[in-house]
Image 1 (cartoon, rainbow, N blue to C red):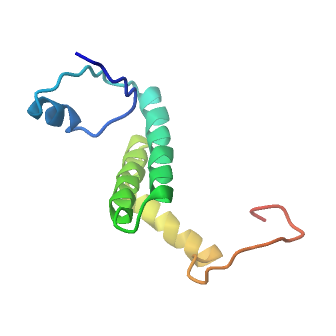
Image 2: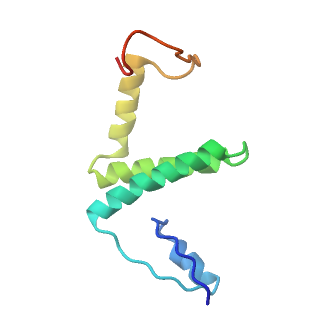
Length: 112
């Protein structure tokens, strides 16, 4: 039996899917610190997949990213509503991205 070493956070039902395909696997449960690290790594992985996605794949990649954002919020003890509220607050203060503005240069540091 050939083994593929994935060494990454997976969705909860992946072991069931592997079993349904007569596959074998080994998993372990992460501690809280490992879980936090792996959630963030998975978010970066999914952001890269979104970056490379075709138009047909974008919805699925956005759904993966949203799932990770919700999981990170829960892991940090904040509800997703708090994330939504912060997003609204930041949009009211700094705007969104509707105008498609690309900053070429300024005389101030980034974020100022």
